[in-house]
Length: 293
Image 1 (cartoon, rainbow, N blue to C red):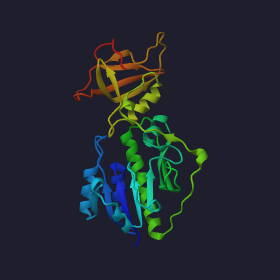
Image 2 (image 1 turned 30 degrees about the vertical axis):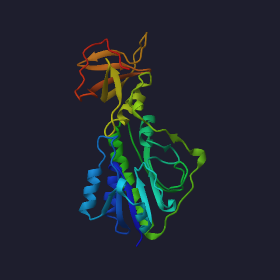
Image 3 (image 1 turned 180 degrees about the horizontal axis):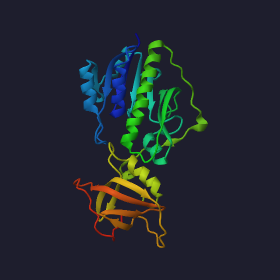
Image 4 (image 1 turned 180 degrees about the vertical axis):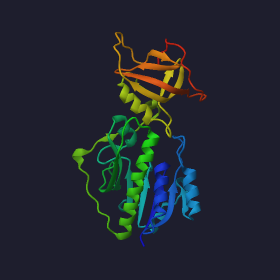
């Protein structure tokens, strides 16, 4: 019987682990997991508990001996962000986009900010280039807006489960077929850091609504500066524009029950809920003469 190992992180990795435990056609020999300090919840504990429940060997990436990979037919990386140095011909990578679109970093976040009508996952054979390995399969699903990143992860996790089951069966039957990507259709998604959590109020309100929703839990949350403090934007709504003769992005235009309406480059954003980064306390907006930066 052919066998696999999983390199997994996060909710999508956990979902795929649950699926592979029910795929009796291929043997799951062991799992390598990692923690992630950049998110509020990394699901590492759940991955460990599930492996223990099913008597599957489980290794933290910092204590894993890569020579163990010699004992498996293929290894699959899901939500993984580190280089795997072993035999690339045996490494299958699940990428968080419909390749060749959005090669690179944070593709799901980028797709949501851009307002894509569908999201998906692609399985590819790894190579030395930038997410341009031959495609083994793709699963995708339509979405509608507004949508938060947590909802999108739940939706796309089903695509991951369907695809990992398909790949598992093909590994078991020795029927994997890989198709080269169309380089003319390739696009790229840049890495994101702490600066990218800050909102640019000069942008269109609908873009900002999608951005704020795409940066929420399990990520750190979209943020803005107000009175020398940093606030996290939890719940917002894009509103139709009004004619403002001296338009200045970031200023409060209306204030209703402590919920401010903020002027954007085009359109308006109503902040329905926010909290302070420093102490987690809810923000109560009490004065019109407030500018968000």
